[in-house]
Length: 635
Image 1 (cartoon, rainbow, N blue to C red):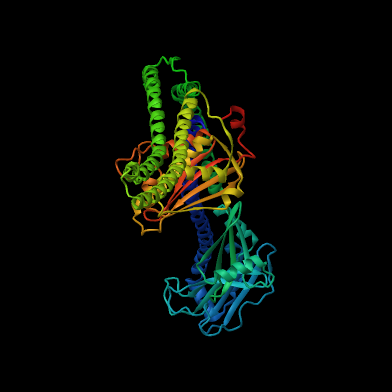
Image 2 (image 1 turned 30 degrees about the horizontal axis):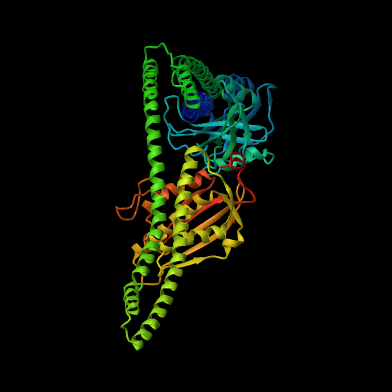
C-alpha cells in the first residue's frame, strides 16, 4: 500500500472515529434529552387535563356553595315550602346553573327534593342515583362543619358525572347544619371536547370498569394500579399518557388518555440529522483540501524521490541525480541524496578494487587451507616411511658383508653370517615392498595436491567442470585421502544409504575437499570433547530430498564431539570464525559453504548444544535431476 493510500486511509479513519463519536453523543445524550423534555411536556399536558377537570368541579362547587349558604334553602329543608320549590327548583333554574343534577337532603339524610335534567332537551332524566335516605357515612352526607365539602365522580348509566356537595347553612354561613345540597354535571363528550380545546391536546376518556375495554387499555389499567401515577407509551409519532381518575368512593372510575404529538423528538432528530450531514459535508470538504494539500506538498515529491531511489536500486546508475527544486526538507533531502550517491560512486570504485584484492586473498587462503589438509596425511606417510627405513638393519648388513669378504673368517662363523644375511635380505625386501606401497600413496597424495592446484587454476580462469560422482565411491576416496589424519581410536561408520542414493553432480576435487574439511572438523570436535578412548564416532549418512529445483543428495557427517552452542551455530560458516583454538584460521567451513553454493548446493550445521555433538549437512544436485542452470553453464 502506498503512503498516499495510508495517509488518506488515516484521515478517513480519523473522520469516521470523530463521526462515530459525534453520532454516539447525539444519539445517546442529545436525543434522550429531547425525549425527556417531550415526556415532561406530556406529563404536564396530563396535569393540565386534570386541572381543567378540577376547575370544572370548582365551578360546580361555587354554584353549590351559593345555594347551600342561603336562608331560603335553609328554610326549605325544614318546612318543604312550595313557594321556594316553584320559584327556584325548576328546569330554568337548573339550566341557568348548567347542572344536570340538583338534590336537597335534610339533616336526617332524607331526600327532600331531587331532579336530574337533560339540559339540551329540557327534560327530566329517568335515573335514580340516590336512595330516599343516604346511608350513614356516605361521602355526600359526611359534612360535619359549615366549611365542609364533598367532590367526586359518579358513574351513571348515562355516563360519568361530576358531583359536589355542600352543607346547608344560613346566608351568614352559620349553623346548625340543616342538610346538604348536591349538584352534578355530566362529564360528556361536549365537556371532554371543551377540556381538549382548552388544554390543546387530544383527550380520550374510557370507563375503567368497562368489560369491553380494548386489550391495550386493559393492560395499561393493570400496569397503572394506583391513582396519581402516569404511564407513558411511546409510539412512532406520538406519546400516549394514561392516568386513572377515581370516583366519589375512591374506586377506579375513568381511564384518561392524552395523545401528545412527538414534535420535540422530530425536531431534535431533524437537528441531529442536520448536524451529522453538515459534519459529513465539512469532513468531505476538509478531506479534499487535506488530500490536495498533502499530494502537492508531501506525497508527490515523496513519490518522485521513491521512484528515483527504486530506479537507482534496480539499475545501479548512480550518475543520474535527483533534481528537486524545493527549499523545504524534501529539497534538502534530495540534495543530500545526490551528494551521497556521488560519494557512493567513489566508494564503489574503491570497493571494487578492494574486493578484487580480497577475492585473491580469499582464494589463496582457501588454497593454502586445502593444501594444508592434504599435507597432513602426506606428512604422516613420509614419517612412517622414514621410520620404517631407519629400522632397517643396514649397519648389520655392512658388517656381515665385511666379515664374509675376509678370508680369515672361520667356516662356522661364515655359516651364521650367511644365514643372517639371508634373513636380513628378506626383511629388507619386505621393507622395500612396503616402501613401494607407501610411496605410491605418497604419489597419490602429491597428485591430489596437484589436482587442488589445477582446480584452483581452472577456477581462476573459468567455472568448475561438473561431473557425475557416485556418492559411495566419492566418500571412500575422501576417507582414503585423509586416512592419515583420522585417528584409529575414532570409529568411522559409513551407512549403506551412501550407495542407495546413487550419484550427485559436482566437481570431484571440490566435493572431496568439502568432505575432508567436514571429516577433519568432526575429528577436532571429538578431540576437544575428551571422550574416553575408543568412544569417538563419526557417522556418514545419505538420503534423497525433493524440492522445487529438483532432487538433491543430502550427505550428513554426524559426530559425538563437543557440539556447538546456539550462539555460535549461525556463525560457524563465516570467514575467520572458529569455536576451536586460536591457531585455527576459520577458513575451512567458510570455503566449504561458498564452494557448495557455487555448485548449486549448500552446507549447514545442526547441534543440540555444547556436549551434544554436531551434524554437518552437505546438499548437492542429484545426478538424475541437476538444476537447469548448472547444465546450461557447466557449473
